[in-house]
Image 1 (tube, rainbow, N blue to C red):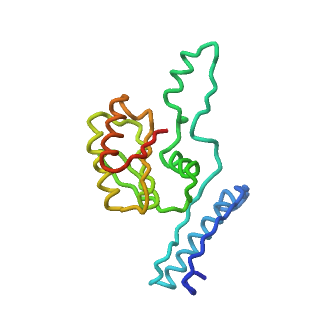
Image 2 (image 1 turned 90 degrees about the vertical axis):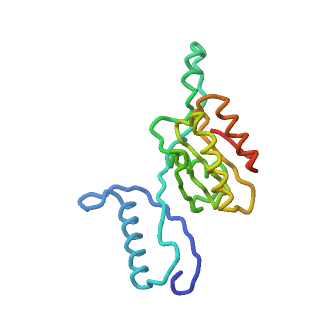
Image 3 (image 1 turned 180 degrees about the vertical axis):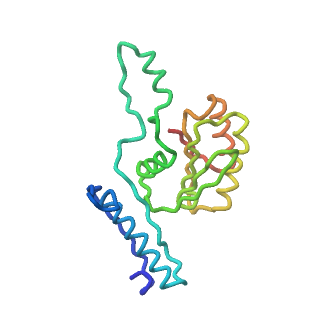
Length: 196
């Protein structure tokens, strides 16, 4: 319908991952994903000039990527050491990024671009409204090139409002590195710098 009337329909499809026996697909959700791929291909084949979005994103319900504070009152020292990294192990940058979108109230369908700066993946969400670097390590030598790369990219994106930058707190080598990152970004007009 979008290709015929120029509409801009969006939808959310919820599918239970019900298992299928004896078919080439593992679940009903896998059948649905394949049907969406084939429908997109058919639209593109029949309407080569159609420039709309034919992609989709798949999300699976999971627990939070962030550990809850659950102190062992008999060994608080070890509890504090274990809490230095408060993101659960085995979670990808994409896992953390999409949870961040949810926590900030951003649409899960908002455009996301990725560039590499100072050897780190940096994500721009919504045309620069949110810029994140969720790398596991940011050394003092990386700060200036990473910060200036973010500043330059934000300038090119020219978001309509303020930009929020989010980093993984445990990534910074120390507090000096974290403070330097925030200071460089603030000097260039990005005052809202957060870490998780």
